[in-house]
Length: 124
Image (tube, rainbow, N blue to C red; front, top):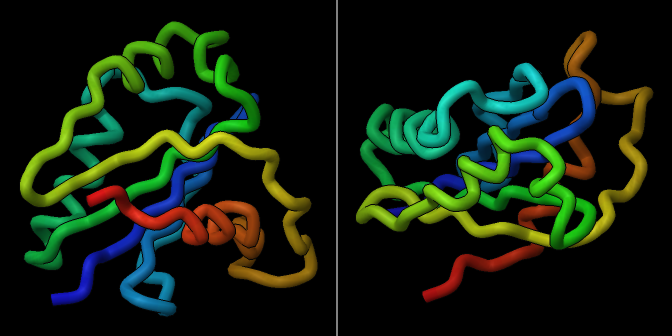
């Protein structure tokens, strides 16, 4: 059973999210800058995993270790992350590469920097 992958890249105005089934993108989203509830990210990931009936690994990418501490809602989200049988979410620290603006779905961009988070492997 193949694990689904989700990359989440918070930004100052929007949070971009990409879900892939292997190499195939199945969901791209631009959401408000931070979740309104500490369990929103985990619940969204679990919903996608339940939809597909498979486990999901998510990488939450930030530019620096303390980057999420700037917004209380993201801080609460990170503090509340747990591992369930269906979902694992890891914090990935590193600067994203600039996105390729010319490609992608209309208005959403190509999500290249979010896709780059896929280089991080789930921890066993």
